[in-house]
Figure 1 (tube, rainbow, N blue to C red):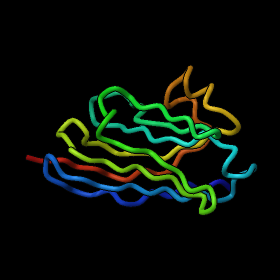
Figure 2 (cartoon, one colour):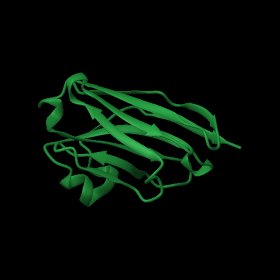
Figure 3 (cartoon, rainbow, N blue to C red):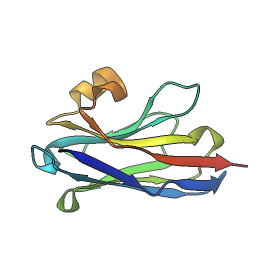
Figure 4 (cartoon, rainbow, N blue to C red):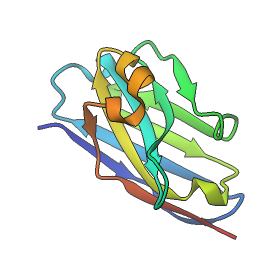
Length: 128
């Protein structure tokens, strides 16, 4: 059974930083064969892909976080990270770790709905 367990969320003031972590287990393939990403969901808004990193290490960010967020992966630890700096009120939401096997093509085409596996989410709240 695939498990993606997120941690690191919390409450922070605008301009602050948080680091999210996601540990994967129970995957059918080796972890390094997965497209890994983060998406977020806030009340009244649609799910939004934040960033993803493909099996080759190529990274894609949504425009609103580029330059502020950094996604990275440690394949030896089956772990995905999201370093979030200069947080804004609009970054508030539940952040989900997600995985899709072999490539990010489905995620490119379908957005967050393209992931085959997803975690339970971790809440990020940015306040003034």
